[in-house]
Image 1 (cartoon, rainbow, N blue to C red):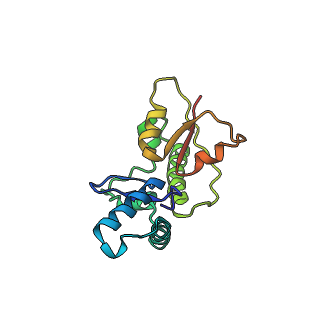
Image 2 (image 1 turned 180 degrees about the horizontal axis):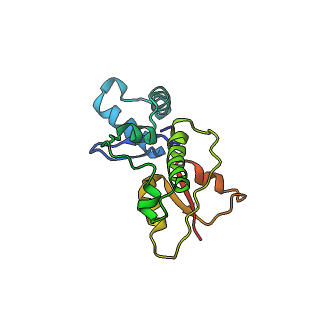
Image 3 (image 1 turned 45 degrees about the horizontal axis):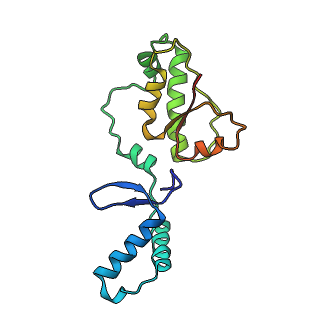
Length: 167
């Protein structure tokens, strides 16, 4: 998965998760049992095959998600800040909300593109600011108190679309 920068494994039964080293052993064993000519297959060969298949058939979970969305014809992008956070419905808030959502989508379609804007949400505790960002970002949302100059901060960016600096 190019968005997550991870090798993804589709388990029998529909479970999708990151590929583990132990999966190579499991796959090697299954091939050895099911395909007698490969009874003595080397796990290194299986690893090379897995990496080649992943390289030649990349996926991108964020792009796949955006591609799966179907618009119902109701325009919302300009007013989502107003309806979600009860901010004043004016030209500024419409532009900020619309451009921020477009920026999220652009970062999915053009990884590394320049988008130097931060959405700042101010309000009383308990007004569901973090909850709303979690709903919007889903699995690609993370909260942090880490400083951008922290060595681990850049690792937070990988596989996440919304990084929330809480408090």
